[in-house]
Image 1: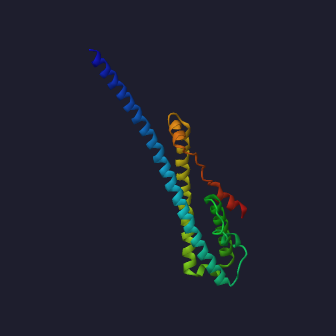
Image 2: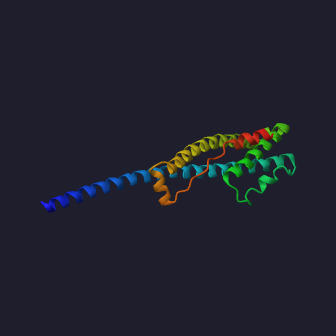
Image 3: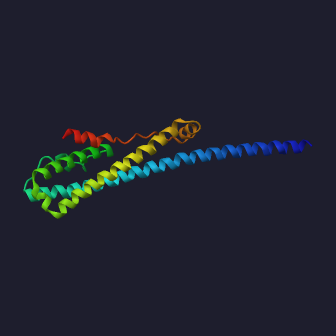
Length: 181
């Protein structure tokens, strides 16, 4: 009888440990899943900003060739690759640059006659729409991730795995850039 009691206790302890382990794994996986979504959205933001930068570079080249000018307005944009900028900072520079491009386009109507230029401007506007959506999704995932890091029991797992909180992407940048105009 005594050995059966010991085996029963061992079975109960094993069962409890398995339940705890499953609980930890499920919570860990939920943190990792949201972190993956945050990282993917951040990568998409970086890629879309690079696309926007390339398109703006092409637009500026057309402006300078068509108008036969070398503008100082785009000096900050031209130095964008030499600086180690965060996506927020790069986005602000790109938004300001695009606003300048739009002003120049309004002032010099002959730019609209260049087919490739009009297509580039349209592509930049599409990039802006895409960026807005990706930034919104990124902020949604970051908010969930940061909430996980602070809520029980995920906070113990996050401290053990040394997960760090993420900052929200500043969506007001574009609005601030438009206000500057």
